Length: 405
Image 1 (cartoon, rainbow, N blue to C red):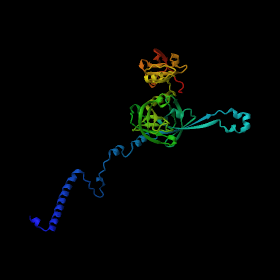
Image 2: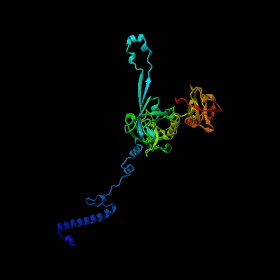
Image 3: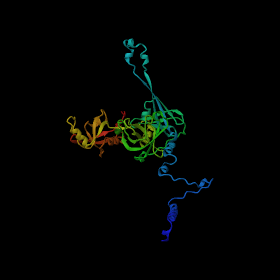
C-alpha cells in the first residue's frame, strides 16, 4: 500500500530498475548455458602456431583430398603413354583422258603434269608401352597399311616404330621401338573387375593435343561390336562417357587406381558422351599372339545372321510383301551364306534358324559369334537348325577367317 502512495515518477523509476535487473539475471543464465552447446575456441599465444586447430573438412573435401585421384592415376601411368604418327603413300590412277591428244588440245600439255599420281596421307593416334623392351600396344587402324610409323614419347624423344603384328578383327596392333631397356611401362589392370559406375580416365592425343586427360565413368559393359555398328569386328566393348576424340585411338582407359582397363578405340559420331574401349583382358591375349606369330587366327562359319525373336518373326510373317515365312521362335536367323565357306559346304541355307551348337541353346547373334570365336580352327561343330517346319542336324568344320571385311 505504501508503494502505491509514492509519487508517480518514483514508481515509474522503480519499475525500470526492476526490469533491468531481471534482464541482467536472464542474460547471465543464458551465458552459463551456451558454452555447453559449442566447443570453445582455442586460445593461441603469439608465436605458438603448433596449437592452431585445423578446421574440420567437409565430407566432399575429405573424399577429394588435396590432390585429385585423377592426378595420382595419371602420374602412375606417367610417360608410358605415347603419340603415334603415321605416313602412307597412295598411288592414284592417272586419268587416261589426260594423255589423249584430243583432250590435251583443250587443256594444254601441262595439265596431266599437274595431276599428282602419288599422295601422302598422315595419321595420328595414341598407344602405351607394355614392356621395358619397347613394346607398344595400340589400335590396328592407327598403323594399318602405314609406310612409316613414328613413336613420340612424352619427354619429346622420337623413335621409328616397327609393326610386329596386326589383328583387324579385334583392332589391335603391337609396335616395337628400340629405345633401350629402361622405358616406363603402363600398369595393366583387369577388365573383369570393372563395374558400371566405376571411374574411367582416358589418356591420349585427341586431335593432336598431346597428353590430354578426360574423366568419366563406365557406362556399360559387354557392348557388342554389332550393337555399336562395327560388324567386321568381334569384340565386346567397354562403354564410357569419358571424352574420346580422333587421336585418342590406341590410348589407355584407366580406372581410379591408374591401371589400364581398356584401349580407347571408337566413338559414335552421331552422339556425345558415348565412347568404346577394348577390354584389357582381351588385349593381353591378342598382344601375346601378335608378339609370337605376328597375326591371330580366327575361326569362322561364313554366315550373315540376325537375332530372331517370336515378335520379330511375327512382324515379318504378317507383312503381305514378305518373301519368306519365318518360324516364330528364338534363335539366329541366317540372312546370307558366304560362298565357299564352311557353312556353305555343310549345307546351311538362307532362311535357316540356328537353334543349338554342340547341344547348347543359341538365342542371339552375339552368342553365336562368341561361341565360334572361342572354338578351335578345324573343330567340327554340331549345329541344329530349323528349316521351315523341320529341324536338321548339320556338322560344320570351322576354317580360318582370311579377311575381316
